[in-house]
Length: 138
Image 1 (cartoon, rainbow, N blue to C red):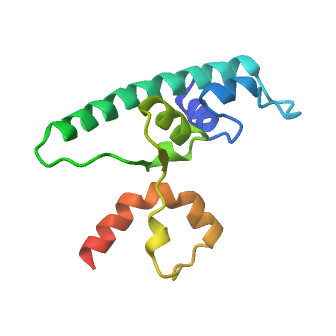
Image 2 (cartoon, rainbow, N blue to C red):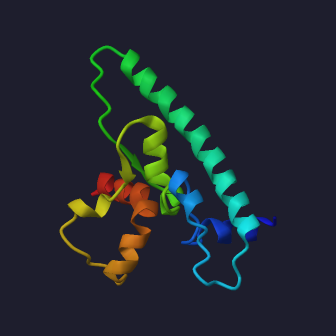
């Protein structure tokens, strides 16, 4: 599959990952729906999330090996991957730790940009690093 098509499918809101996703074929009456393609996209995503979970687990184990470490009570997902439906829940299931999309704008007073609030909510996980850098400079 060409990279552009793979990226388009990745951001398709019908693509979900994890066990519940396999119960839902996602077709919803869409004539352009290809079950074989959706299966391949899901499998690829799930494989990538399993590898990510292993990396995160190793990081958590390293954290626990440090003197004075505290419990990891929650994991936040940010970046473009956080836009994939079900990624946070599936990663949390694999880790056994509550996991959710990062929402860095929750702590800000208000939207003073020209970007509508709804669009900012969608973009929020992708802008986490930029926001952190901007706050560091302030």
